[in-house]
Image 1 (cartoon, rainbow, N blue to C red):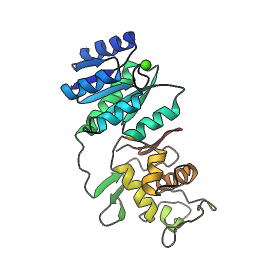
Image 2 (image 1 turned 90 degrees about the horizontal axis):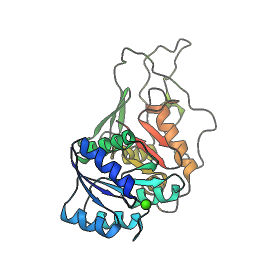
Image 3 (image 1 turned 120 degrees about the vertical axis):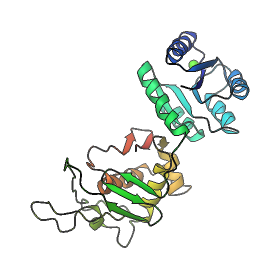
Image 4 (image 1 turned 45 degrees about the vertical axis):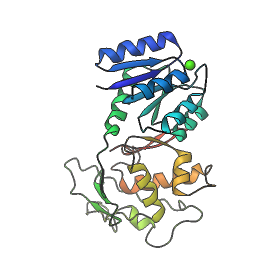
Length: 268
Ligand code: CA
């Protein structure tokens, strides 16, 4: 339940969303253009904003910037399938997530629930659990949690040649990726993975905003710094390395997930 502001200039879509969200117990206010959206949000601060990017009077990106000047309210962007760059720009401007038109009500509701959970974030503190691993950001250490009953832990070695140019030194190598000295049966306790400084930074950025889709550009900017915005292949490589070290099944990541062409997300 919450107060939702819907900003959408297509009357039928606006009406359908209003009816559906009200029927779920949300308090819904609406605006059909950017100026009214900003005034409405200021006059009646919402818990969530659903924002169409294509508005008659201004770009939805400018609405996001206007809101972000004073509020951290979660913003879900509605965008056409053809406007990938717009969606990335929206995320970089401060949107929390997006739904691609046409979308189902269930999809929108799922996004609303997800950002609603984040609106009251549980401070993760220094300890975060990812799959079978407990990650301690204070001690910069990863420990392996006792194996669960399913016993599906997958050991995968780091393939040769996977090191990027500028690979990190010391203790970061393949030894960290899987069980050291696993025999043919592979049933010994795995040694805890070790993360490189870059992997720690990347993981920290992802974990800091659980569930939030973070654009590749934002990740590159925060982890590698300005000037690396286009180095998406390095980013992909590092995410894959984190998956091999932390995911229960790196080939089917559940906690460090990809939104193709957009970015990455940490799912607790
Ligand atoms: Ca529109």
